[in-house]
Image (tube, rainbow, N blue to C red):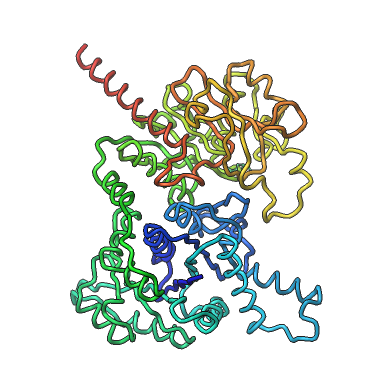
Length: 550
Ligand code: GLN
């Protein structure tokens, strides 16, 4: 097993997750089996209970773990499915050490940060890499070197160089090199300090990656090398790029892959990065474009919907189209006129996931606008639920229909908690989470998109379409296009997806298909949505020309 540890310095949010993912992609491109582990030094056991406004989206793995969004980057760049074990937090480590202590597993010992906590960290990294049958594991230590809370993790990764053989462990450090426009120079001092902080905990980096807006010139790389005990050839520049998928290419061009091969005593293999080259070309020079409205609550924090935006990108690569996003804050949609004003001119409408009542009525109006005007609609999780509420209120005529999440006393609880959820206590990891199969009815748009009868998608929700109303939904003309097979003992399982028969493209999914979308394998409903948006655009341009001619 080979280990690559990635740390970060100077400031947070430099893109360690992207660097880790890119390294993984360069190694995958050489044919290695690679996995990645993200260490989050916070005390939460998982990311499920944290605010997306602060940390970005909660990424759900197939096995139902609520993880940091970097796990999503790893999955997309490495094209592998990761699991709960790939996201390690302080909370998990302490929880299990304390539980072991209570069970008497350390009997007679004083339980300490070194060696008990550090051993637990090392065991978990090793076990994950072994269980996932990897040849190389890339481990990203979250936070910034110098933080108090990451110290036990840095100590644990330091020990690897002595536990393992020479040539099996390497350390890569990512820092910021700011550019001062007034004096027209790149400043290396913060990097020097950061490396000396890292050396202070016993880790000499093998490779430095310098983040900056522009490519860092050679003399700056040389200067950094001189002050930090690395060779100039081991200092890389990672300038800001337009598309994340360019990062592996930019680093490979400077020879990062080769340096990693040398440090890890691997033979030199010319990488196959054709997919990334083509993807970047498609993203930069698409032949078409569409604009879709993203109706949501966190419109000022796109990271809260990261995987959905990635899904659009994957669909763009597949359809050779640029997908522009118009952010629409659902709280600003107060009535149908405002919906029309904010949504006019878009080629598709997406209502995204969400929790809590804020902005709900605006989302319902957005679904109504899409249904009445024949605009392609894609509802994800809450986006399905609001489409069902909209339909029952305005087509079925059930006044006050709602989800009990937003109105516990609604006369028509069309979206409701299922008995399993009513019994749940506590909030971490208690939703319907992870992969669930859905049985897709033939002769639906969904079946055409997936091309199969059963598909797996990841879930993260508490509420469901109320089985008591399903009969009436179907009678009134709504298509239930997929159900959970064999669940619930009510004949038909829970509603997994809906669509409208007399509409060019109106679909809702209870699952989160964005989580499984990959640049090389776009999620079917994302592909379908963008395809429908392209057709809608073509048709509306055609109509406009006809109107002009008349
Ligand atoms: N709040 C809804 C539920 O819990 C939807 C969740 C979501 O969109 N992920 O069912």
